[in-house]
Image (cartoon, rainbow, N blue to C red; front, side, top):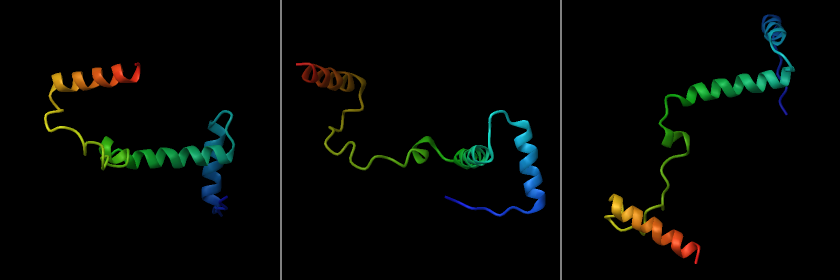
Length: 85
């Protein structure tokens, strides 16, 4: 829970924003504005940074040639075959 004290000008601006919104109360509007601002800050980051960085142990047991297409396809086929056996 958060309590925020707004000055008169900010209170007026919030009222104007609410007047243009349909089906939104103060709480919903403030949540949406915070989310929009937060998302705008994320634009400068790469997709990997936005998702929390590179996985640390994802490829620890992978063979060095796993990045080649034929090897990836074979690894996926083996995994699916073992999974459905």
